[in-house]
Amino acid sequence: MPFTIATWNINSVRLREGLVARLLAEEAPDVLCLQECKAPVDKIPAEAFAALGYPFMVARGQKGYNGVAILSKRPITEAGAGDFAGLGHARHVAARLENGVVIHNFYVPAGGDIPDRAVNEKFGQKLDYLAAMRDHFRSQPPRRAILVGDLNIAPREDDVWNHRALLKIVSHTPVEVEALGETQAAGDWVDITRQDIPDGRLYSWWSYRAPDWDAADKGRRLDHVWATADIAAAGHGSRILREVRGWDQPSDHAPVLAGFDL
Image 1 (spheres, rainbow, N blue to C red):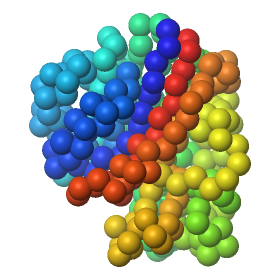
Image 2 (cartoon, rainbow, N blue to C red; image 1 turned 120 degrees about the vertical axis):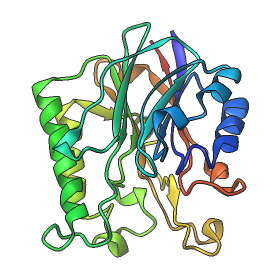
Image 3 (tube, rainbow, N blue to C red; image 1 turned 180 degrees about the vertical axis):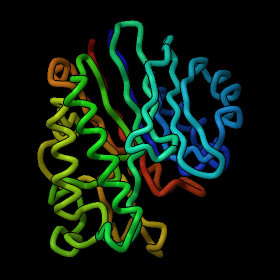
Image 4 (cartoon, helix red, strand yellow; image 1 turned 30 degrees about the vertical axis):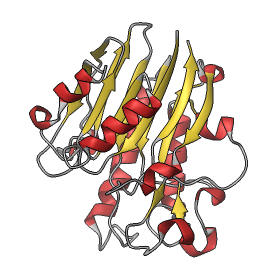
C-alpha cells in the first residue's frame, strides 16, 4: 500500500484553514499530521477538510494552544494519545491505518528561551517530555510505526544555519540533542528525511522575527519523519516544502513529506 505522509506545524488551524486546504489540493498527501492546532477538537474545521477528500480525522485539542490532528484520505482508527510527563497538554495522538501501521503525531514542548531548567520551567518540561517518550518506547517497543511532528530540536550540525552560534540556543543545545537521540534509539526509529537526504543543510522552520526570512535563511530542521527500523527501508521521496513558508500569512514552519510503500 503506497502512501504519502506530511507533517506541518500549522500554528492555528482555524487561522490557516485556507493554507491547509491549499496544501491538500496541491500536494494531496494521503495523511496530513498537524501540530499546534490551537483549537478544541470540535473547532477544527473537519467538515471543510472532509469536503476536500479527507473524511477521517483523529485529534486532541486545547483552546488557544497545543493541539494535534491527523487527517486522512484513507480509513484510520484512533490508536491512543499519551500525556507524556503528565503536563496535561494535547501534544500526542496516534492513528492506525488499514495495513496496521501506526502513525504517531507529536508536538514536543518548545522549551522557552533559556536552556536551564533551574531558571526556566519550560525547558525542564521539554526534557521531561523527551524522557517520558524515551521510557515509553523502551517499555513498549514500537513496530511497523511512523513518528512525525514538530519535535522542536534540530539534532545535526547541518540541521541549523550555524552550529556554533546555536549551541547555547534552545532547540540545538547538546542536552536536547542527546535527549532526542536517546528517544530515537529507544524506539529503534530511523530518521527517514536524513535517510533520503543524508547530506547538506535542511531547514523546516524560519523565525517570524527575520525581516526577510528567505534571504537571511537562518533556519532549523525542527520537523521530522521517523519510522521504525522494520519498515524504514520502505520510506522514500522525502521533501521539505520551503516555498510554503512564503505563502500569505504563513506558519513559521514548512511541511515535511515522505512516501512509504507498505
